[in-house]
Amino acid sequence: MKEQYDCSHCAESLFGQKYILKEDEPYCVLCYEALFSHSCQECQKLIGCTSKDLSYKDRHWHSECFLCGKCSRSLVERPFAARDDLLLCTECYSSEYSAKCHACLKTIMPGSKKMEHKGSSWHENCFTCNRCQQPIGTRSFVLKDGSNYCLPCYEKQFGPPSPRGLTRCLSPQPITTGGVNYRDQPWHKECFVCISCKQQLAGQRFTSRDDFAYCLDCFCNLFAKKCASCTTPISGLGGSKYISFEQRQWHNDCFNCKRCCVSLVGRGFLTCRDDILCPDCGKDF
Image (cartoon, rainbow, N blue to C red):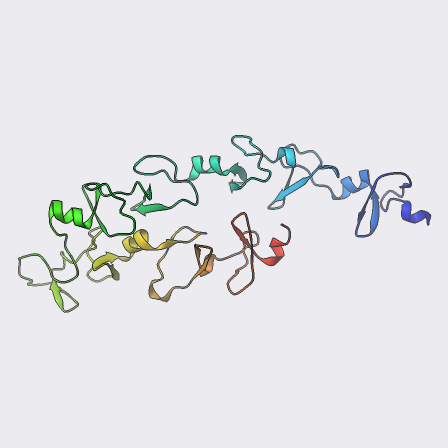
């Protein structure tokens, strides 16, 4: 019976001493820590048996060393994000990397609704009509002289935009050459444009919403959901497929395990701190 009380590595007696079992083999504390314990990413010291070992992406920390890389607040039991291997609390991450509202210049916090157009972002309540000051939301609007107008206000102030309703060209000039025919109605080529960016639509793919014509880029930026992984719009046009889960969407090609990057399309998965993980990676959490 003597051998079962000896350390499996150094063979020192464990009688009356603390020891640790690993795979049914006993080890003294010193041998166990030397063989199996990890070094802390922050202080570089060994994470002993009596300390909590917190891990993230194959890196390890003492619980007291698991801190935000900017404000040094503890990240234990708190949501956090990683940027270039630096761990940040959500407040610091948002302050550094989240979009700023084009109107109020404040940070648009992750998870909050935002509107995007031509590279600028707004809080939902800040994306308002320049005339009536009401939120535009997902309604159609017109950009004029750097200001956004809902369509009723635009018509009151400037007259109806062209094309309106995809019903007829509003120009009084006759169509001689280069005309466009859509829905059995003729248009001048230069009049058949995207309601948002005014780019000519002749010869390129476009779509319509609320009876207004949009180029695909404007339609996606204004109305399409954003992929939770790559953040680019999910157009759904042309039969493109996407995954939807808990009010978030992913392109099929982007719906991958956060740790090992294996595709999760058609497979079971787990969630951890808003990350999507395959069952193999998820079991560690």
